[in-house]
Length: 362
Ligand code: NAD
Ligand code: GLY
Image (cartoon, rainbow, N blue to C red; front, side):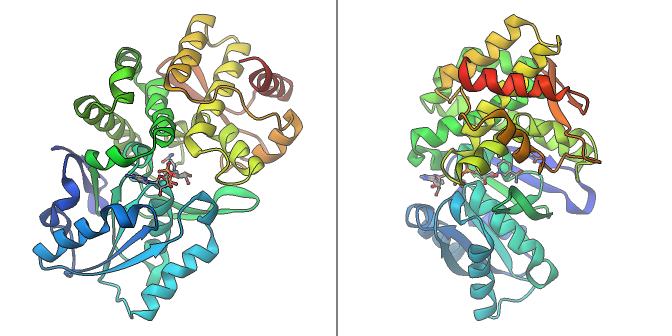
């Protein structure tokens, strides 16, 4: 087992990465205030893994309930969130009870938001079961649901008490989901870890073949990068925004196409290429580096070309981005591989041209 700590003073917590961790009731139990939990999962993940978590909790003498939600990004909304509150209130769940999010980023974000708001805040644990959630969404305390006008627009910062990333759960993950998660892994290399990007270029075939050692290394390195950023800027007043490389374009794709049509990681991949293309147009990124970025996404099998919504529609959707400040669109751009900046002065004509190029030619 590999472990790291997200050192946020009284909100500090451990991330454990390894095999068979969902059977470790001792780890789950070690962070509980009272030995009572509610596991919240969905109708795809619960049949696969809920019984094992329940057995582990039984062995650690922890009382538990299970709530099963409908699966999918299209259900990351108020009505599904209310199903959680209905279940918690219906069972008179008290504030000292801990929620366990068992699933991918959709479950993690929704359960985290429920935990942030139920009775003004209860503890929660992340048990992420997708690559994307193991390398990104389970760490850092961003929780949210979607709004028809914008992705993740309603939410709160609420840190988990523990993250248990069981690599074995990735065995049942559909290939498309594994590839989508790889977009967020590549992101860390692009924004701040050039050596990791080099490693990914060499080892991508091992990762796609689900080699456990390679996955453990990549998940730990990703979590380490994320933890360092979150420790520096927990509530995104500065450097944390760099974690959103490709996301402003990507969120426009997700919202514009309808939630669930493009996977989040797929939209981030196409969005990262738009950000790279814009950086190249501004003269910051060399053709060689752009080609490396295009190529690694191609090797993973991620979509390179954005959907042809039209640059005007992209810009309209992007104007809802949380990084918009005083009406100014702030984008994460690249000065090289491993070197990202936030830039609010990119000319609209260049942004439009980069979008059009990436919807037609890339
Ligand atoms: P997801 O949660 O929808 O999971 C993808 C699919 O795989 C779902 O159908 C899920 O039920 C299924 N699944 C999960 N684990 C499985 C397993 N082990 N075996 C088989 N099937 C499994 O999608 P995701 O990619 O994990 O997360 C995307 C979400 O995360 C988006 O809503 C995005 O906005 C959010 N996100 C949040 C943050 C953050 O910092 N909070 C960061 C990145 C992404
Ligand atoms: N996924 C972006 C963040 O956590 O800040």
